[in-house]
Image (cartoon, rainbow over all chains, first blue to last red; front, side, top):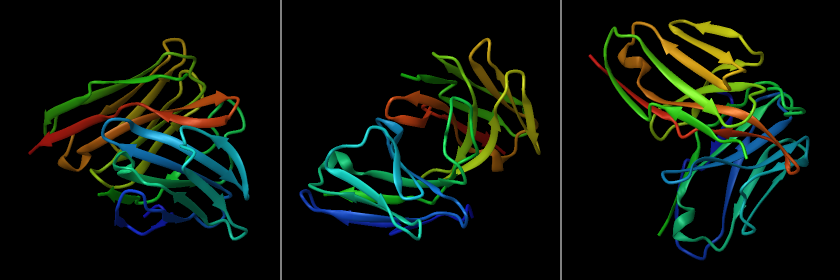
Length: 118
Length: 113
């Protein structure tokens, strides 16, 4: 158990719908990262928040958004869902952020939310 | 952009055998992470390597970082069925959009009892 929790574990919805995925980081971790894992694209970084502020942005679609709340939990909102959005969505947390080209602290991953869009 | 290639893509070994997984970057490696994933589950942190020539071990798993070759290797000694899973390497990518981890495509390991 990494200490990172994600809800729900599974989510089945229809195209065009909107869903919210929730993540609670490990106690004391200020950074939250969101990733998408699909068979064809592998594990892709979406977005990072550090202490409530957006810190890095990866391959996140405009239909997707995220935020980190004062209690440090984070939510990933996915809207106008398409079949291709079906994937595993992971949240990870770390104490610090990646402040330079050198690795800075390991990221601990949650168990993921499996999203199926029908 | 940071490209990480892992080899082999999949591997089947007999229990007790040693094996090596490689992760090669198209750009300079400033640091590297190794994770293990059971199918459909979350990633488990194995090791983080920060300096060229660094080598770390945990139980029967050893990882090395060769900055000159822009490569890292993960070696498992006397493999066991519990080692089965997908091994992923990740590297720090620095960009205008922030610093992030990019991952290789993974190596799927099966250990036959």
